Length: 203
Image (cartoon, rainbow, N blue to C red; front, side, top):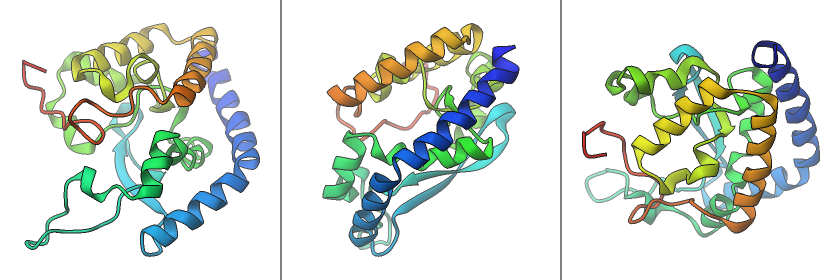
């Protein structure tokens, strides 16, 4: 009952309240990023949702679009703006995803939506993460976020799919708040965010 009905009601209620309460911060960050990114405060990208259905995720744009001499985008670490680093460390870049939750593309809690190109290389176990709506935060995020391996991340995601409950979601919310304050697990060692997933046996 919770998984198929009450979870959506709670998502909608809390997202609307969150957008209202965070609107002053939303506007300040939007203005700051618009200045840093030549008038582009938002980042839109196609991501797979429940059952692999594609939607456009909305985030604050923390990296600029600077390119090298060959016209290719510079590495992530070189494109992170000063305000972008702050926004990412404080997880403020996730706020616009509340709009995705209101629309029904996402849930507050669930496996993080990854890149579309990963869909073709998932194994059967990894594909199970798409049995539920993706979330703004999830079990993998409160257990290491970008600092854990891909295998650990997928194991956490599938474990969540099999154990969804109101109490678990409540626990994840409180653990997320704690993680945000201590700024833990934002980057993977040696990477600005998280390395690309290739599904190699060594990962």
